[in-house]
Image (cartoon, rainbow, N blue to C red; front, top):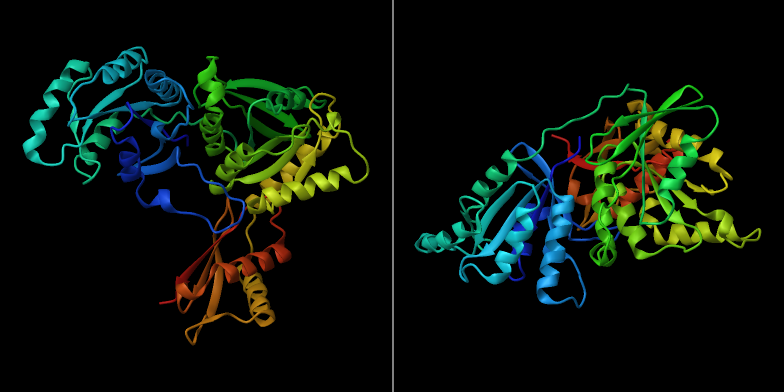
Amino acid sequence: MVKPVLAIVGRPNVGKSTIFNRIVGERVSIVEDIPGVTRDRIYSSAEWLNHDFNIIDTGGIDIGDEPFLEQIRQQAEIAIQEADVIVFLTNGREGVTAADEEVAKILYRAKKPVVLAVNKIDNPDMKDYIYDFYALGFGDPFPISGAHGLGLGDLLDEAAKHFPKDEKKDYEDDTIKFSLIGRPNVGKSSLVNAMIGAERVIVSNIAGTTRDAIDSVITVDGQKYVIIDTAGMRKRGKVYETTEKYSVLRALKAIERSDVVLIVLDGEEGIIEQDKHIAGYAHDAGRAVVIVVNKWDAVEKDEKTMKAFEENIRGHFQFLDYAPIVFLSAKTKKRIHTLIPMINLASENHSMRVETSVLNDVIMDAVAMNPTPTDNGKRLKIYYTTQVAVKPPTFVVFVNDPELLHFSYQRFLENRIRDAFGFEGTPIKIFARERK
């Protein structure tokens, strides 16, 4: 299911980031204790009642040294491009300003649902402050207080009314869905074209479930695949060049629909910080991952080059130590035949189930090899372990006290599970539960 996207738009200093944090709640402060995972607070996931959605904080966009009104325009245009529903945030204490009117003019042309919110209405005596905002032409303003969390429920109720209905395209259960993500110009489109044009491939195009995207359905050696292509920017200009990290949002929509995510790197340019931002979202979503180094034909190399590049990847992407790496060239199609087998492997491991008895033998052997830790004289006891889900494989360890299962020992157990069962290409999740 593709989650709706809610964007918070408004001039500076109206409280966009405060509202963003209120809606997202504790999720924004969650930091995974794995080296190499980078975090970007422009985007997050949130939920309201029965609605899961993605949320954009345009206040986090770094435009640089652009003039004041130009910054506002650029932020609003990005939100218009990416969002399904827009929250237009204003400041009730300051009334309608020229900058608010500038944002309103842009949103008139958006042809997207707009919900008008008037922030900093911190007590009932201030409700009269909202009446000036009817002049902006977006219907009834919603009085809210980011500082106190007031009125956000009514605001989200209204926004949820405009969320698009899920248009999920059903494919056969054994179809492997994969997407290609990465920063611009790493060769994603070329790689898609190379795969579609390969021998033994039957191609048909079906309209995808994401806006402006096409699913390419291919068959290779009897196995069906869906290549989920991400929608490209329809407009060009400095706004998109200076906010390149916003390409993450299109990648996220593709990730949500994928079984396997191909993280495409530019072998010629090497790794940059943006690559880690994008890869982190695939990891967080629990999808199987294959790292693809494209443009390998353009790299001057000797017998040590590939190993050195792989070590560089492992150093930058420590949180993807389970992901296989494929070196290829979409342009020359060299080594492209190695990609499908890796996709198959990652997909198979992503769906793998382990028998409980065999799993517990592995865990008990691990405990015998490395006894459980103690904390303030209390030792962790592991009673038994069971797999509760696939995609990704998820395990619950029943213990005497979940607080005693520290990250380092959990990582040790994960490594022993991987040693025993492989799980190459897929993250695995381990949760501790107290045995009642």
